[in-house]
Image (cartoon, rainbow, N blue to C red):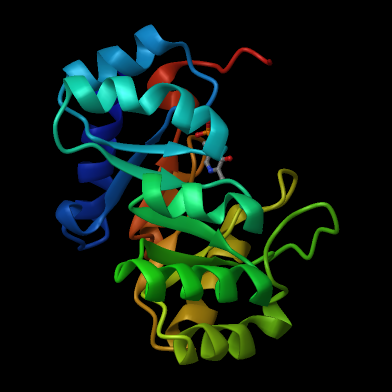
Amino acid sequence: MALSDITTRLAACAETHGRAAADITLIAVSKVQPTERVDAVLTEGHRIFGENRVQEAQGRWPDFQARFDGIDLHLIGPLQTNKARQAVEMFGTIHTVDRPKLAKTLARLAQERGTSPDLFIQVNTGEEPQKAGCLPSEADAFIADARAMDLPLLGLMCIPPVDEEPSLHFALLAKIAKRNGLSGLSMGMSSDFETAIAQGATHIRVGSAIFGERTPV
Ligand SMILES: *Cc1c(COP(=O)(O)O)cnc(C)c1O
């Protein structure tokens, strides 16, 4: 089964690089996948899932949460401020904090609710105009601002450009995290998670290698 293949590869890769497999969180990215496939992975015992849209997650996770204990949801797609409240109610971790307005909204919600999801700041390492994330040159200042707002910042996240060597982007993300004293690195997907683990990933986001190809909606 695909899930056990990935956990086996994760463990082997961690060992090769002198890392503890337990320090690497496998997020099974279930966006757009048919319910039966998600159900199968839950039945196998996995509990950590990634979704990229608040609305899609709201549509189907309450049913799963009624049937399976201990589900931990991660938001890995862009977040609009008008969806922030729904997002903080649903997700234990948000990987896509990328602008001051969103950080302020999350800080206000944290104050009001007395709790906040764990947060990653998304960095647009490829400086792609169509992609979310703060620019590498703005990252240090944005990290400092988020910290000043008392937000629980775990680390940084990136999605490398599809046509470039991912390791250059992983290295850049790791460098920015290190100089800011952040230990979390959300990087690596189906095609490159082993490269990401080699470069220090603490959270890998794996979709199609676990669930099969996504059928376009
Ligand atoms: C879809 C998605 C993934 C998973 O991609 P796969 O190639 O299917 O593993 C990981 N991260 C983000 C941000 C995504 O949107």
